[in-house]
Amino acid sequence: MKAKRDREEPCFICNHYHDHENGEPCQVCGHVMTQAERRHLEHSVLPTPIIPGSLYLGSYDTASRSELLRAMGITHILNTWPSNPALFKNSFTYHTVSSTPVDFQECFDFIDSVLKAEQKVLVYCMTGTSRSPSVVISYLMKHRGWRLVESYKWVKDKRPVISIKDEDAKRLMDFEVQLRGDCSAPLGFTVLDITPTFAPQVQPSQATTQTPETAAMPSTSGPSFGAQGTQGQWSLAGASAPTGGFRFGGNVQQPSASASRNPFTLSRQIGDAGNDMETGA
Image (tube, rainbow, N blue to C red):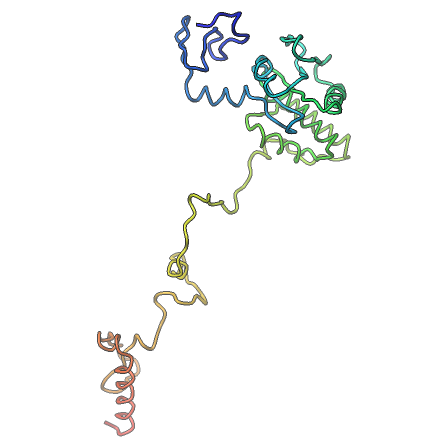
């Protein structure tokens, strides 16, 4: 088991120091990371690129992994939770917000100074789901000129685990009114997360080639008007004229096998029937 001095952060499930990422059981409580926990770890730990190569979003777990941040070239860290300590002052340039709730302009000034120097900054809070995403969303609204809906959907698409709290959502809506005079998401973000599906997209691996025969099949839910080549259409070649003359209201006989196969036989039968009618047979 790894000692505390060899590992900056404990297991995010049992809070003990063991190599949980590589499947090592905890010697204190016996915890072994499950697949669901591993997926959660990937979403919560890895820095999310909001502006690739410049602005990243994460959680406390993200900010506690100095080797990962250095490998990605991140040089500055914006801490949006005042009680969080600056873990690696010798490796990164920190700025911790001075108030709660966060002063957006204070955050903008720090982010702008980093981006102007063409360096990379990580914005983080404890879970990376509400406070730090709110700062990033507000930054996109102010410096990219995006509406709240556009900024939220952009960040949500990049980091699906975000879940903006009501108080942070209210601040973002008020901020958009301040910038634009109105709010593009007056009902909040819960409505934006429910996107109706009008035409489900077929994945390329699931797509099948529709044959003409399949395309021509009539719908079973109702009649198909004007459909060409559908089964069940009336055709002269598929009917048989009565041999004893036409009788209106009489039952139509089923076509014989020979008549169905040979249209010339049918034409001859129809001609004979017409001659019989003229002679009064």
